[in-house]
Image (tube, rainbow, N blue to C red; front, top):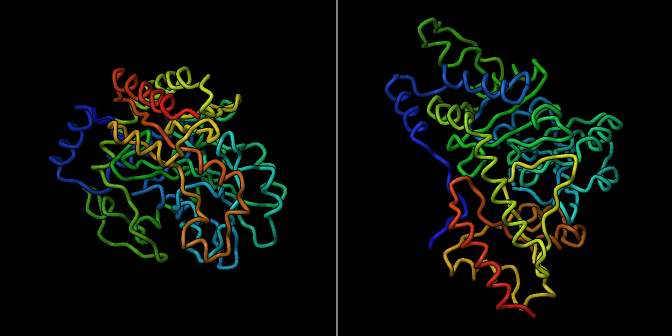
Length: 382
């Protein structure tokens, strides 16, 4: 058996929608993209959704609204994908890394205030694996120090924090629709905000800073004249991507329920095993179950995390690691970060791998994964 770490859930509806778009003669940002934005707003209960070509682009445009300067600082968790920090570095600003909680892999809010100074402009909480960060505490800190909150919600559709949908809490929330995400457009992202001025500026910047995009210039009621108000980017989504997104959005809850069922089966299978720490979900929130992290207890096994992953691979099961902490990369070592400053992050990294969890996993495949994880554990027990 060969089980990939992820496989997107694509139905005939997505295929038909793309074919219809191709036949329409309009492939780039147009009616389908704007419809996707509107439907996304309806689903979340948000006011303004600005589609882009990646979650990274969403983060970049969100931070453009903050007018970051080279001396400014933005607080982020040390355990995140590089895009979170990368977007800050686009402004030559400084990403300030904070340690995480062992149980949830979320930013440790008790360690945020010590990192705040006069140069701090924002906090980017990352909703790891789909579990929302401690938003009440983060918003309280942000209000106390007059900071912005830009949520990295690349994993968090659909997730809720205290019955509020992620996408309706911070100043801007940034989603990713990459091929592995809980809703995919192949490549894509969305920046969601309640601020109409910020939404308007992000729409402007996503297409070169032009006052009229292609649809407004070349559509049936378009006008060829336009102005360039400020230097922008080429970040727009296409109607091809939006066609996929519209169909995915119709099934986002169904896909979530399937991932949840798989997570529950994993929990039941591994919950009483002395070789594992189960990933903790806090009681006042729900996770999208984008990831299912497993933490090994080294004292219970004769093999380490990397060896465990290799053993799974030999049995046809692909696993992931989320994430290599940022301070371990050459790019961030140059900023003076060292692993000794992030003891929880190191503890989590050394023990954790992620199992496949996606809607199209069959019962047989889930059982095969469980059986082999348990078999590897049994055969390598101390």
